[in-house]
Length: 100
Image 1 (tube, rainbow, N blue to C red):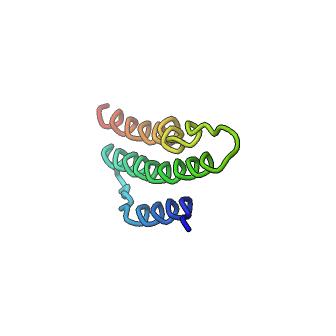
Image 2 (image 1 turned 45 degrees about the horizontal axis):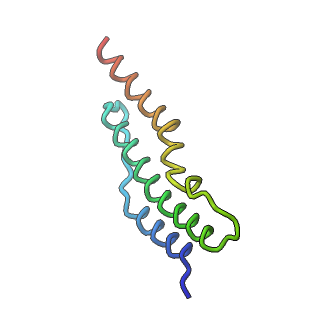
């Protein structure tokens, strides 16, 4: 018997485990923060694939119309508007300090 949510979950965990986390050193370069943003977006893509698979399974088994938009790019949209913005702000601050 197929279990789409479990399959998506296992794929997500396997793919997440292969990511290499970035490292920020004591006197970071702005590019190090860029690597953090790339890492965050990579995590979001992986998690969002799983969330969409969950939404599709819910839709396939629900008796009401399920809006897959609520299961699409959920984490990426949140990260880009919040966490990634803050990471960019940290990089910009270093650039400004070094330009002064």
